Figure (cartoon, rainbow, N blue to C red):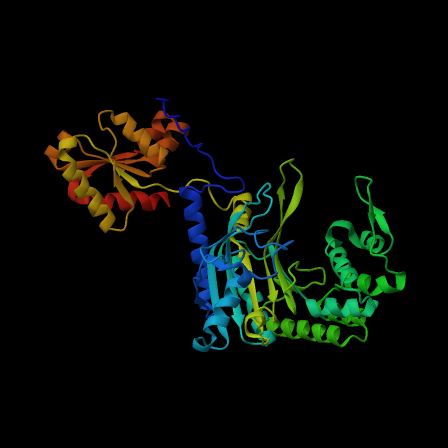
Length: 490
């Protein structure tokens, strides 16, 4: 009889495009989500937690390069042969939820949602197939006050998580102004219009002269390759270039330049009027151009934006992987999408919202040195006598009841040095020690591990004597002394 073939062990590896997050990273994200949720809640938004799985039909056409249901998303067929997928973002699920429950929801409906989304796209440096989003949306009102409120709330969120004023700007534009510019060019072919929009989106990279060439016959890129242009005449390209260079010295100048760029276009004029209303509403709340600015260079890539669009950009410099300075860039974006719910209801439902990239924000705070890589660990109660485990559990119970994070060492207690190594690996601030001698005297030893490490690295013997890092206190004062040491550590 043939010997059964031994099954190979599975390889312990993270799937391509995904990653694991450990204690400090998870704690930092949780804290940031709590801060952002606090701002959203303060603005009157309610939490919504929708399913992570949607029908591909509900997700719709707003996926990149989607001609098949399993392109761009992680999709599968259920037992009824219906295509399902992990959600691609948090906006398409909101449209489905509102259409499904609209008779039970207030109008307008203000909701925020936080959680992971999944995209079946090619991963790259800092680009993963699973990441967190943090959205807030208002559904059911066409008022520009809703858009102004989203911009103000976005600025407040950035400051709440630790991005100070001066290190960010929320930039606002309007898709209607873009449509008015297209109308002014006289371009009616949808493919050519799409090419013009893609060219506008390259303004930050190639500048005015580069856009002028790309709108015309084309240009040589940095590698020497020739890129075909859109084929517009100089007269057709003029409104686009006027639009891109319309940012003036103040809001009034920018709006005046935009009116000139859209010419006689009704839709473009309406878009400029909406931007003026948003700027007025923001100014009334004290949000000036140092925080939120009208900026024609903002072009959101998704097809469902129908009006105002906004983007939060961090303006400070960081060093890239080659040590070159560059601006950190965008961490949030959104806009008005009045046609999205219509897919389900057949009726236009106005909506506007924003999505914050939490992982990008965390990376920014790390780049500025405002977050530390290590999270503080628990107080460790060491075990000197395994037969007295109940005593040690009583200690840790008292600490936890006082709101102090604590644990009993549960490894092999034979080697006390290993217990302190464990506490060091856990980044523990304090170790509690009670052997037989201490128990007989009714005292405990409390070791300040943070101060002890600092003294061991930097202090002279005299400084060690002046600043003890280990204290003997009565057993009854355990909690009080631990709390005092933790307070001294900040």
